[in-house]
Length: 202
Image (cartoon, rainbow, N blue to C red; front, side, top):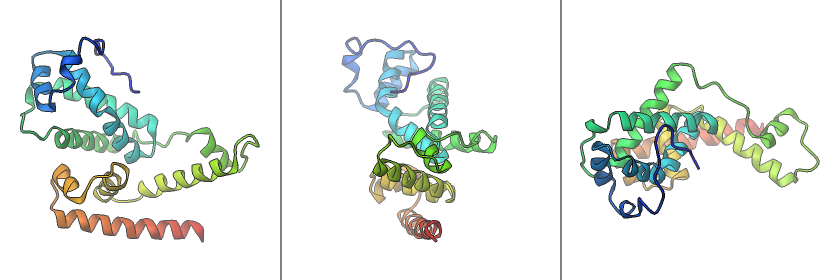
């Protein structure tokens, strides 16, 4: 699990009364300086933010760094948040914007993949690693690499649809895109991913 930076996290027991509150109520408490309320928000949504950023850059380490920046920015701008029942959509936009900033700044240099992927790429797999594990690692690496080749919005739609298993209507609500636009991005993205995979097998 991600370690929340620069925040004093209270124990689970002392924040138990907060865990059932909706996001907007937690943000209202956060605006008063309640770090325990913000800690609940982090625990509730950190996997979502890390997942989005990780798949944006095809790099989990960088994804975690971006997630830390997102929550720091959320804390710093807590007074600006307007409770309208759309916290997840707001968080998605903050994450997306941060990813764009990092990408433009040239901080999205690919780091080394995990040892399995590196072994496969170098052509020197360890004899201690089962073949099926190596095959899965290579396929995962190829999928991440091909996702990174897609335009930003198309990549976002595919990640939200197949990684986070959101419906098309949920994606439209989250991103603010019309439903027809979401469907178009999904169709084009799947078509391009299929072509990329075929090219890789040629």
